[in-house]
Length: 203
Image (cartoon, rainbow, N blue to C red; front, side, top):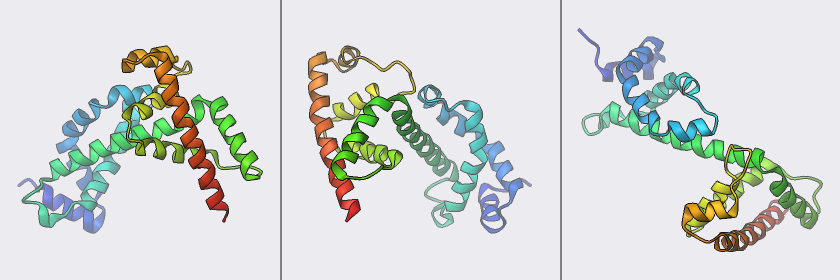
């Protein structure tokens, strides 16, 4: 008699059963890969390939089983819960890699901003990765969705050749001057917020 998903999950919760993880993988791998395929193109551009994702599947199943609420099993099937976790994993991985690409792809822009921050804050150095994370969080808070899109197309990319303002304008159906105006307006806002944060962190 085949063991149910719920029993396998209980075994994982109690004993961290590797065989149970493997059995759940064999049952739900098709679902996981199908959901991953929807994000495959952008993840590949960010240098996260199918083989790397395959290495994450067992951990994805393990964490999903550990967090799955057995009391809600009648309302939410494990396959549905696992699917949502897979989607969140892909979206979080995309954001993580975009932030990394922002640091690596645009050192001149970042360095210039860092130098200004050091000069105004009288610090010897600042944590570049933390600053980039903060910049990305600011972009997500701005109501105009074009701002985040412009920054992503210009800086958050794994491509060595960044898009021109004209190319970005074509993508957003704007003139290159409009794109540049939006960028200049918001880079001033970001710099002001960044300097304010650095000053607060010093207190």
